[in-house]
Amino acid sequence: MSLPTVLVTGATGRLGTAVCATLLERGFSVRATDRRFTKDFPIRVEVGDVCDEYFAHRVVEGVDAVVHLANHPNPFSGPTPQRLLADNVAMNGNVFHAAVSLGVRSLVFASSIQVMIRRDRPVKAPPFPIPYLPLDGELPPNPGLNTYGISKEFGERLLRLYTESDPALSATSIRFPMLVGDWHLSRMQMGKPLPLASIDFIEATAHLFLEDAGTLVAAVLERRLPGYHQYFPARSMELRGYSLEEILRDRYPDVPRRGALPADDGLIDLSAITREVGWVPVHRLVYDVER
Image: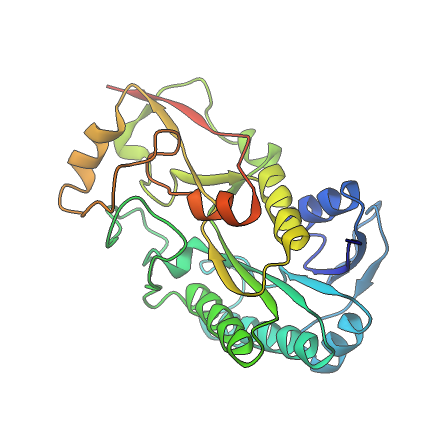
């Protein structure tokens, strides 16, 4: 089966750069678009704003698949909450509508953990409310008043509606957690024990390295499963000095369990992703935690 020609929106961001690099390595033909020009990017970038429905239509035309990463990335800095919501909803609607109208058969959307974990303020306030453990991609939406999370939930719901109208369409929402790269590792106090109270549990302990994010997107595109799919591809940090059960007894004593916690990833159930697209993450963060 020949590999599709893929458009990556938001291509020059950290996630977009990793995704483009992986797709090129895997032999995909990749087109890229972003609002900003980046020098020495490995492929030509079509500069423009997919908030403009006409630009979105033009850049989508002629591709087989779209990886939509272009959104305002942070609910606590940058545009106002109102502007973030309006822009992200416009970007998602424009790209998805253009893709479906033009006959694109595969869509991948960068959703977020913030659809699942209510976080209305940029304040460390664990424990975050969660309905069950281990976490998976089917966790019900609960973005609260976080307009970033609301915009991602809108994108997920829109993709579901498109696949209900066309079951042959392949549409996948990936609820990315904290993404880790060299830029992030250099800011972290690796090797120096951290107080357990300083760790923003669940959201901060759920993470994914950018390299693994890139291979997941490639795996989804290679399988092209029909219908709507939704994944939470996170790893649990290894917190040396505490057992997972100790931490859960302290932070989430009353959260029900849906089966045993996975041996490798504790808080996260990756079985659906592995079963459906054959993907497993390679990298993992390790923290030494003070007793």
